[in-house]
Length: 435
Image (cartoon, rainbow, N blue to C red; front, side, top):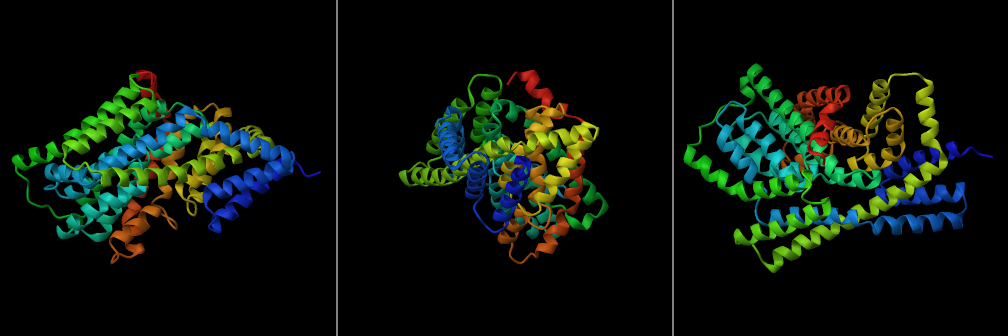
């Protein structure tokens, strides 16, 4: 008789083959999950378990938070908020050497708080910032590298879609995950800013200084983001201090975004319809992925592979930090050819129980996982942010962009090491605000 752990390992290998062959992540997860359960228990029991798991997942009240935050983001896009954060930052620091690159990081952080998506952040901010930097004489590789790295902030800045999905499949508090992300994302942004400042000090030709904007223009630019900034502060602040549940916060955000859309004079049935269609398209895709992930997680649990791996790790008598570093290495290896969502949904059912056995908080693990996942957006050979940027600036070669992002990758690895060595970076704030 074939050991169930071996069947589980074969299922994981088969899933990797399916993903490499181009099978959609949700379909691949569901097929392997149902097929594995059919082998381990029986086809009838697998179908019953699959139906019950899918129904239980789709009937969860908490799942409503995802389309609501997506709808809030798309309404804000319709209100014309896509370029405002970069323009404000450019007015304040653009005159400094490397200032437009600094502004692009600030713009990515601000826009990430609306979109919750790395790819949307890099696509939107680069379409605005890259032409401005190139016009100012910035070296193309340096400019593209800063934007590619800054775009990863969108994955961790609340309301992060990745953290919402992790919270749902790992059954963790989304409010705590959002609170836990704030210090890591702030220090991540600071590490990028420091990288830009150091590079410009060592090689001033990378980023010439431009004319200083007068205070009248700066203040005028600030008024453009005041409403969106208040929306973000009210929704996320209310969620973290307990005024709202995650679903209530997202609902309040949608209503407030509609008010902003109206006040900006952009409200129309067409704009509302486009926002709704975009939300339904994205949410439907994510729901399919979540159902597939739960089926796959059920199969992995039945197979006993996580228990076997946990026992193997404990049997090695390695320190918990060393085990987490090994997990990070595996995540980075898989991230070189899997997209972020696929990586997270594949590894969470396997790695989360091991991390819990080692004494790590599931909240910290969620931040660690998304932070590690972000590196996959910019490191070769996949580097989805790199390909998005190359789509915006078709005259830039992939090699030029990858070379430009190397200093920021160094900063990323140092920041990830700090997160592993100092878990309180993620755990202190949730304990203080009681999210």
